Length: 482
Ligand code: SF4
Image 1 (cartoon, rainbow, N blue to C red):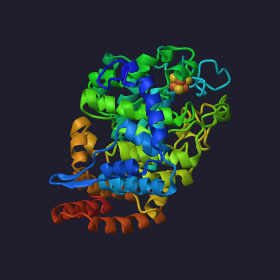
Image 2: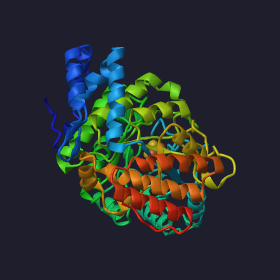
Image 3: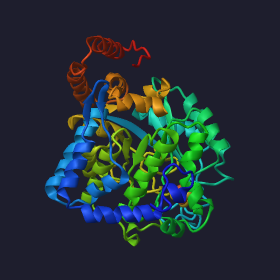
Image 4: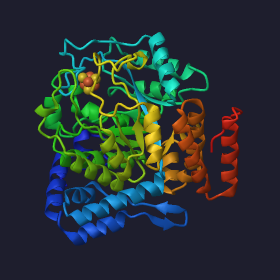
């Protein structure tokens, strides 16, 4: 296809507009081609190998055919397959995290975000290091161990030095039994040198949403500020990887452009990272545009209904089986419950999307980036997950043991992650239950852990995990992880 080259480092070649249009055309023509759809479902099915389980995934073209297919029976088969893939590689674990907003100063003009420069009525805030500390302690008191820090782009208010200082502060806080063990970072596209500084500061995943892969729409939606540069933004993950960051997180803001376009672009981006760096994205997030100060989602005419949203999640799960998938509190409890079945592996809980929101008694709205749909406490979310049969996991062992980037992916591709992740999830959940959970949650949790321990195939691993959980219960804990 003209202009399309997944190995190129130029945005216009690895996200080729012509290739996306052609993919959408091909998907439309084949959306009722049952023979092709069956062969794609078969290709994507997990297969047993000598090393464990292997999943081939699908290309952006193939996955786009599934996304276009509207035959109810086939759609149900996609959902069943997405669930099977998720169970094969992630089991029933769900990783928990919370966003931490550091600053909403921003020089960009993104028309869908309340932090845009021209919004003069939103309260502008930036946390001091003392305030960062207070926010982190509030998050630790809930039980969080993994954060995603967020800040607008502003070289004066939020330079890289400020972000680095905040990361250092966060990692330095020891409060009761809590510690933030993984800080993921969601800040604007930057230079290789700055990515290297973030790497040296010990960040987990670098997250940057593309917002939209359609260049024409992108330029209109980002009329002013450094973010207007589509190529610089789209090529950011290559610079991050050049700067030594192993784990990068992709995402688009669904609702800005046609979802078929974004879906193909997202998968092409993943294919590009795999082709150039040998490792695909660590995570893919699926935010949908929401109401906020100065933002009315109804003015964007590409909003997607829940039914299509679910199909997108299932098709991403099938196409990139080893990539973690994230859904935030932008979505309601009902939507999140369905999404968890279809492939989501990480969710946020008790999020506050304003700067300094965690230390306030009531959820503040004055500096909020978006309206939170799921407003439950972390304890309620943890309890709910367990009642749905999931294990909320607070584990950060892979990151701490250096199992990142291709080392993580190699283990994941062999299905080996389950051998250490499952017991680690049970041990970190035990810590949460002892230190932070309400009485009901604790009771439900330890009953679940008892059943889940029985599922560990290796007796030795089971016995070590059981010993550690007993030690946690008796407050004699050791910092042990598989
Ligand atoms: S999306 Fe990011 S860059 Fe754009 S206005 Fe909001 S905070 Fe600034």
